Every structure is written in C-alpha cells, then in structure tokens.
Image (cartoon, rainbow, N blue to C red; front, side):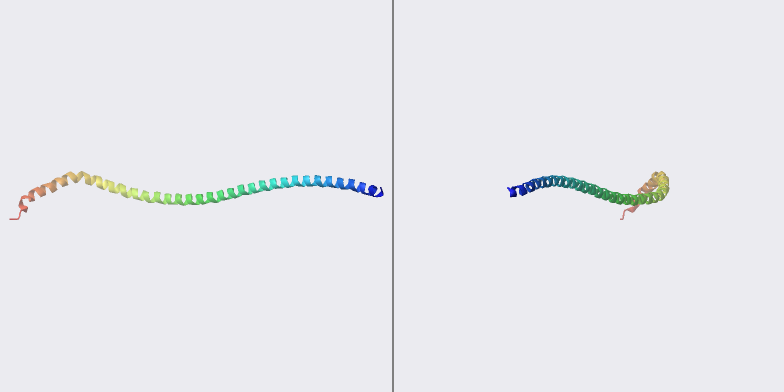
Length: 122
C-alpha cells in the first residue's frame, strides 16, 4: 500500500509527461513539415533566380552579337554607297556605248564582207 501511494503519483506524472512528449513531437513534426515546405520554396526561388541570371547572360551575349552585326551592316552600307556612285558612272558609260553598237556592228560586218573575197589563198 505504501509503495502504491508513492508509485501512483509517479505514474500520473509519467502519463502527463508522455502526453506532453507526444504533443511536443507532433509540434516538432509540424514544424519540420513547415521547414521542408519553406526549403522547397527557397530552392524553387533559387532555380528561378538562376534561370533569370542565365537569361540575362544570354540576352547580353545576343545584344553584343547584334551590336557587332549592326556595326558591320553600317560599314557595308557605307561601302555600298561608294560602289553605287561607281556603278552609276559605269551605267552611264555603258548606256552611251549601247547607242553606238549598231553602227559599230555595221562597220564590222562591212569590213568582213569586203575582205571576204580577197582572203582566199590560191
């Protein structure tokens, strides 16, 4: 009986402590779940940030490439403008030469037909 009186309060205290432990474990599991969710969100944000940084690097590279192409296109346009002047001059010369082609061809045909009978070797 004496032992039961000393053991009984200790059993109640043990049961209360086990209940407190289960409650603490449940809270800990909930907090661990919240931590896991938070870490997953952080990892997702880090992936998004990395993807955004990669995109910035690619866009900067594309911008530099486009600037170089634009510079080359400007140089090409300037050199073609110089060629345009030369081509116009050549076109004017050829147009004036075209006007004399029929006369030149007639003279050449006349020379060939005149010298034709005298070219036979006997």
